[in-house]
Length: 148
Image 1 (cartoon, rainbow, N blue to C red):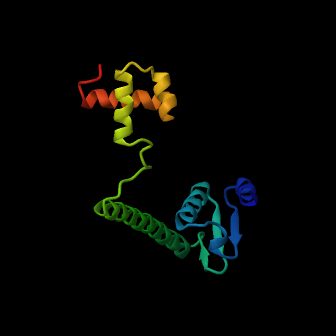
Image 2: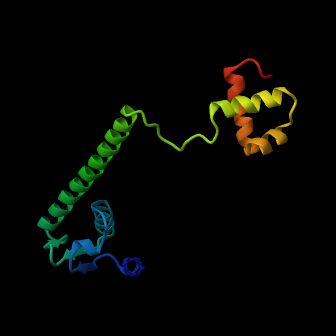
């Protein structure tokens, strides 16, 4: 909250001085975005402990290095996620939450409807939402020709 208030007061030509970079953002991506915003607004940035001053050529160079590092960090995270999902699939795991009803239960619902039970009765008996029952009916009709 205090940082947002401070950032709102900064104007072109101002210099924001911090003791250390990690005080400004939690991730490299956040930090690079903030420094990019400063650059676009003409605000200089100095980090005392890290020796960065964006008003100098070397400071701007370091800023670009940080940008490249942030992009690499995002790509590495993305690669880990993709490989983790692939490994889980290879072990037979599927994404998403477990199905609320087994195929046998759904078939039981369809049999009850065919036997003349109302949708409301089936919903109450199987503790299923009406919208879910309608979805089961659509899926069942798409896969079977029995229920019409």
